[in-house]
Figure 1 (cartoon, helix red, strand yellow):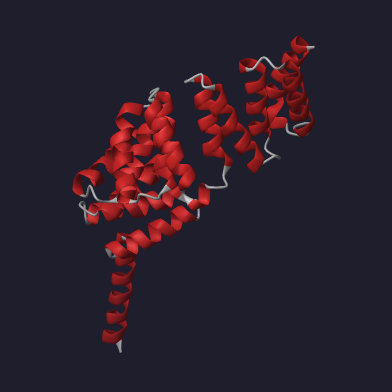
Figure 2 (cartoon, one colour):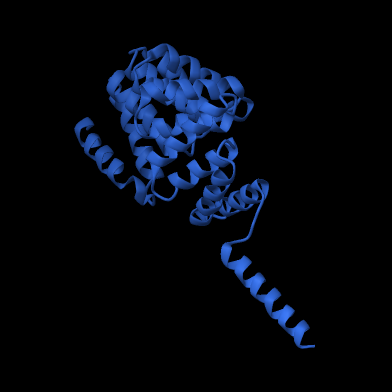
Length: 252
């Protein structure tokens, strides 16, 4: 009886010691738990699981990408870029690694450097809108007119974006300010506004077109006034409203 009691104590101590050392999990378990934590917004826990996964299998691309995302969301964007760069060097055919690297570079305003990984991501998934959007925006920042047209036009042809006004409006503003092509700008801006007449930004873009580029004061006043009426209760547009009100006084 005494011997059995001692064995039970030893077994209990072993369990406690095992728990103190941390639960042993497979790479798949660590990734599943880390991903679940990330989806729940618990990036600290996601980082803990991702770190353990990378330590367990340093060449696992999914672990590196998850760790990069966790680092980004816990305030270490440089560490995130280092991790995802390792992932890309291991597997250039991984869409998430390429896209994440491109996005992080874009967010650091490294527009030249972000193009290659974003293009690689787009090659891997030709109809993915996320790399297309960033490539188009990077092209705007780099003043690469040909790429702006290519990427926004391509984005607009994706079924889920065909009725989305954003690429059409961006194309319109590009033609307006970069190429000084007023007729094309008007076509795109009008079409964007026709898709979402309740969108104040689209309305404002159209007003700017008539005001600055067509010198049509009557139409500009009408659209600016409509914009003000539409945004009366929108506190996020208070600065824009103030600028529009100031402009209306000049146009009277």
